[in-house]
Structures are given as structure tokens and as C-alpha cells.
Length: 123
Image (cartoon, rainbow, N blue to C red; front, top):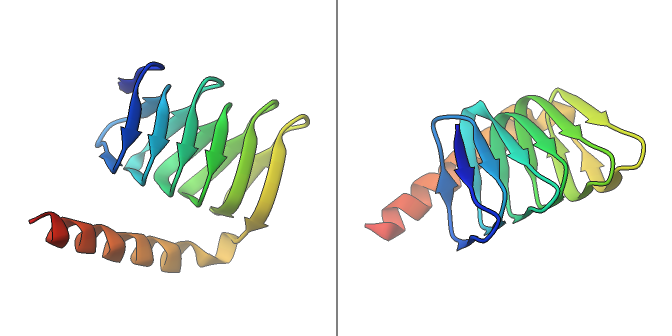
């Protein structure tokens, strides 16, 4: 498991091949296909998050794309789109946006295309 510490602010893309805990602030896309991304209470993520499972205790603003489940816990604040076959929205969580369980394949294709474009621009 990789952990991004609470004192870190990352502006740009984060990619991981193992489970990832984002304890700081991330402004940009996060990709952890096949793994779990956890957004703790102290964390803020602004951008698209792609993972097998996404659990939010803190703040997330953007698309949450999970191949299995997005779990929005009490006290968390999520705004944007949730694209996953399963969404767990706990009492006390704040959610503003849309849920699109049938758009998973399309969302993953678009996200992969955008990642390839970023890679090409980076050189």
C-alpha cells in the first residue's frame, strides 16, 4: 500500500499499481486500476479517480470511476459523477452529482484515451 501524506499537495497525475491512501490534497487524475483508493477525512481530491474500489471519508470533487464499488462514508463530501456498478451512500454523507452505473466501459475508455494523450504530451 502507498500513502500520500497529509502535508503533501500534488498538482498533476498520480498513478499506482497497488492500493493507495491519499491523505493530502490531490489536484489531478488518480489511477489505481485493480486496487483500492482511500480518501481519508483530512484529504481532498479534485479530479478523476479510477480504481477497483474507492472509499471516501474526506472530500472528492470530480468523477469517481470504480470497476466494483464506490463507498461514500458518513461525513464525506462528494460532488461530481459516480460511475460504478455499485454505490454505497451512508447516512451523513453529502453527495451532489449523478450516478451512472451503465457508463463504466465508456468512462474507462475515455479515461484511458486521456491518459495516453497526457503521456504523449509529456514526451
